[in-house]
Every structure is written in C-alpha cells, then in structure tokens.
Image (tube, rainbow, N blue to C red; front, side, top):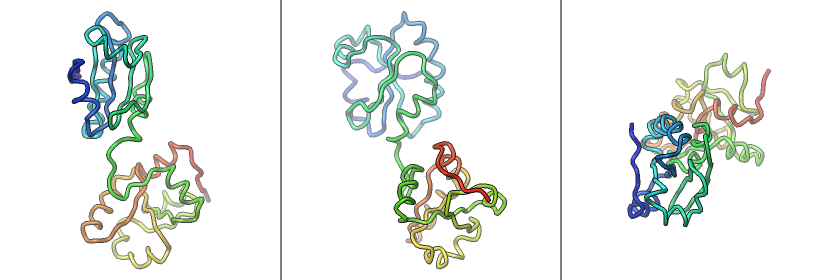
Length: 211
C-alpha cells in the first residue's frame, strides 16, 4: 500500500485537522534510510487502519513546513493529534516504536481501560479485576486480586458480579471481553474491560499473581 504524500498546502487539512492521530514521515527522494523504512511504514499503515493515519511529506517540496518544524535530518517521524505534535523519532526506527507514538491517541471503545489505568485503580482499591479466561489459565497466572468468572457464565452471574464491587473484565487479548461489554451495553448494562487483556498487562510488566 503506497502511502499518501501530503503537500505543504494540504498539511493543515490532512494532518492538523484529522480526527485520527497521524504519523508523518518527513523524507527525501535522495535518502537511503527513508527508502529502507518504506515497507515498515506501509505495514504500519495497514495494521493501524481505522485507528491512525500514516502519511509522508517530502522536505524538498515542503521546505517552509520542514523549517517551521525544525526537521534537521531525514527520515524524521512526528506524531500529531488534534493539531499538535505529540511525539517524534528519527532515523531507522522499529515499527513497534512508531506504533507506541500513536497508541495513546487511538479511538477507544466505551468502557475500555488501559493496563496502567487499571493498575492505578487497583492501588486505590477502586475496582475488582474479573478474569474471564478458563480455569487453567486463571490458575497459572492472573492479575493480583482477580476473581474468576468464565466468560460463558458471566451473563448468568451478573448479580454475583456486581456484589464484588466495581468489576473490570479481562480475557487473554481483550477481544472477547470487548465484544461482551458491547453486547451488554446495548442491553443497558455497562461493564468496563481491560484493553488488550492479560497479554497487555504482561507486556506492560505489571505485577502478576501466581499460585
């Protein structure tokens, strides 16, 4: 997928006024590392479709813009959200790092809670994590203090769930609890869930309880 090249006069409309976060690759035709990064940027754009935009700006054809943003070398990557720069990297950068620049600004599903946010809420004893995975996974490792209610039983145990306090659901990757939370929300039942699930909790190197 070829990335769109944004001209200087289009920058305000296509980047600064975008509803989604935008990663801008400032490049030049003569830059070898820029060419090296193209496949990674194209893969990132495909991966983030609907969550963020990835575009390119040729500094030789947008010299005024490059000067305003103090682009001193290429490739330079700047993430923009709601009209302002929110992060930057230079050179040959892993795709995962570029994704990290944008992730805090992705559109979020209603009720989604990030791992670090859940960690802070747990420190305040404000919520109770509810593990919806199978019994084996729950027994192997879990978020500290988590209660176990398998996902397939959860709709029939809502009264029990609310007796725990303020529950936050989590599964392995977050997809199944997100789907269930959206279904329950349509029925008027609001339940927060952990975005990215237990995998994201582990990726953020947060505490894990083991038997």
